[in-house]
Length: 445
Image 1 (spheres, rainbow, N blue to C red):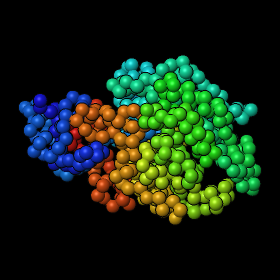
Image 2 (spheres, rainbow, N blue to C red):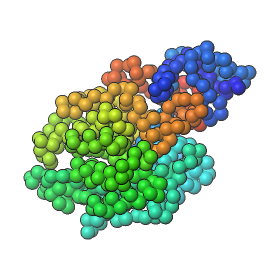
Image 3 (spheres, helix red, strand yellow):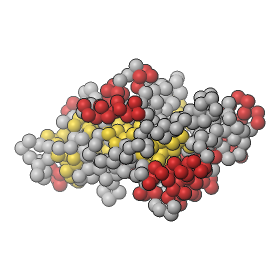
Image 4 (cartoon, one colour):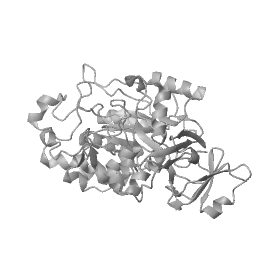
């Protein structure tokens, strides 16, 4: 059967371990028909097939932002959901996982899916509890979605709800409290942090968290945990272990988000239990004194242990944690939306200042190496796995959805320090071109 579109004479980075690289790819309808060398794929040429000569350009799977707040808060900058999607698609993002939604936001997204205005694939994790504390320093429970509803797991839906979001600790704001640690903060820091206790703020007791995770799991939901401090991470690991009861996490895909202050002994448990982890790719970690005032020299290096997770043999993906706290047009802002900048950040551990200067992270960060290949997996097939979609997106394989991008260069061969200079020239979702960069029309079918 002839292809609708054939891209040839290029570099196809598939993220498929059985065929990591190819020359050409054929698209039919909204699916990938075949991948191979030019001769093989040209055999699928028909009278109506569009032939696109890549002239050496690189195609790879569309980026999947596994932890974002893109569609939850666009009104913070006067944007609509349509405008938010357009910004993301220009960055090559074809799928986004919204890690915060209440019933009102779910209603808006469901209406958008019904109207056909969701251009991207959207996975949503409704909140179980609020990510802030009330006057009694408690996190209010929000049960408007779970347990009243079942998960939505159909892979042919544009909007899916594979899990729920649980906040386990705070995040250093007056409303949210502090990261929960296993041992106290340094006394001289506590006066300025606003923590509820000398170990920070834990949102749920161990027994309550165990109950929530087991209940969600039994109802078919995955659970994503906001867990920043090692105390919160410990409680989360305990709750996952309790709920799994010896079963494999491959069935449930429970995932710990952020992993900001991670003890070495906890990393072993991630690997043993198959816990999924999200890791911010791009962050300003250039100050070698970071954390000294809050938790001291003995615990300082724990702040970089998250970058060791990708090498543990467990599943991990890159999070942007984008939340409209900065202009999305500023590619080098903290919590940037741009996947290319996050790739650059996690591979080089470098940060670009407002004046354009580049700094390298502290030595205790740089020791954790993440290869370009692993980083690409963490923005494609890994976040697809986290939401049970690895069989339909996240890699370029026959039968999968034609969600792909064309880049200005090959991230596998460019100098890692120039990764940030790569550009997205085309974004395709479901076999349709959703973005074509000005001047690149000849490569956009």
